[in-house]
Structure formats: structure tokens, C-alpha cells
Image 1 (cartoon, rainbow, N blue to C red):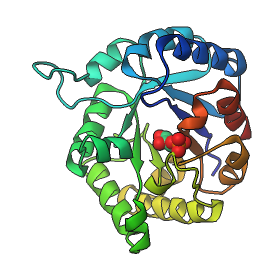
Image 2 (image 1 turned 180 degrees about the vertical axis):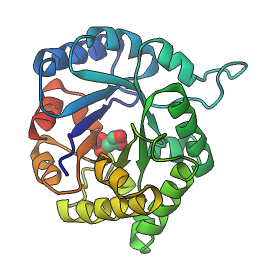
Image 3 (image 1 turned 90 degrees about the vertical axis):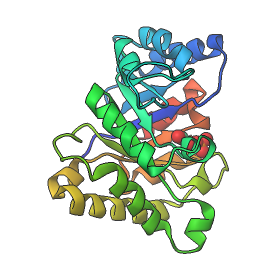
Image 4 (image 1 turned 30 degrees about the vertical axis):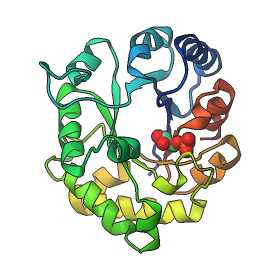
Length: 251
Ligand code: 13P
């Protein structure tokens, strides 16, 4: 089945305000009327509203990098799904490996975040991936299975209709080490088969599964040519309008 490619740009905790707005303008100019792959950018919280205004009426969506599970109240420093939704932002990352490793988001919390995002009507990208040592000890599929089962088992296929999954091997993030297209394809095919077992073949067949981890203009086309790789979640190379545009055009 032909799935529309989706390219995400995770800006992480980078760029001052001026540089973020400049990047948004650069993307608007290059991709504003692009008709191929869909794109989503994930700026830091303070830039969400101005970036989404700058990208309004163009074909680039805007998402938050995280959300808090509570709706409101005494949670200093936290941002809720309803707050994100109320500023017109449509997408959100859930379970990024940096949230899991640096901030202690465990599978149970990631599962709650996914539920909250879906309940708020945000389009979630669920990030999964194994560390280097998990891969070396042959645990890649066991880790991915645990992450997927924990996040998805509470939901029906209908409730997960908007879901995007991003496979991001932790050892490939920000390291310059990319999974080979064959390595990534092997995992993507496994993820699709496992999702099929959980939620049915038609859901799995339509599910966009992105690859993330040192995706660059030079390696994007070969990764995206694989049958089960439906897009990319890009960190470093999303911070320049030229390189992000090249990746979107490669899709
Ligand atoms: P890099 O592209 O910088 O490796 O980051 C990938 C990533 O974590 C995207 O979410």
C-alpha cells in the first residue's frame, strides 16, 4: 500500500528565538506549497505559537516535543495537552528517547502521555528504539515489543487512527552512526508485523513508520526507498532549512 511520507523536524532544545523564526521562514519559502511528503516541525515550547503563525496557510504542521499528563494545576514547569491544543498546535512527540533517558519517562508514563495526546485530539508520534547495549545483547525486538505493547494495548485501532510511529535506534541519534537501510528496514518490517498482530493488518498497513537517527540529505533517499520506511524524524539536519528541505524532497 502506498503511504504518504511524513518528515518530522525535531528542533530539540536548539535555536534562539530569532534563529527559530528565520528557520520557519526558510521552510515556508521552500516547502510552503510543496505537494509531496508531509512535514511537521517540533520547536521548543516558547516558539510553538509564533512558528505556527508563520507557517499558517502552508503545508507544514507544527508539534510540541512533549506534554504533561495532567490537564492543569500545580505542576510547575509543565505544559498540558489542552494548552498545546489551545494555541492551534496539532501534533506532539511522545516517548522520545531523550525524554526516556534524561527525564525518566518510563513505558507507563509514555503510555499515559499517548492517551492524553489522543484524548486532546493531538496527532501523536510515538518514538521507540533500543540502545546500543540492548542491540548488542540481541534485545532489540524485545525492547521494541515492550515499548509498543505498553503504549498501544489500551487503545483500539480507531482511537489510534492518527498515530505515527518513529523508530529511532538510540545509538544512531546525534552520533553520525545511521542504521543501514537494510538494518532499518528489518526493524520497520518487524514493527509493522507486530502492530498488525496488536491492531490488525489494515491498521498496520496504513501506519506511517518513520526512521530517525542521523538522517541527512546524503542518506535520506536510500532509507526512504525501503518498503516499510515511510518517513524520517530528523534532529540535527532539521535545523537548517536547506538540509530539511532536501530530505523532504527526497521522500
Ligand atoms: P539526529 O538526526 O540529530 O540524530 O536526531 C534524531 C532525533 O532524535 C530526532 O528525534
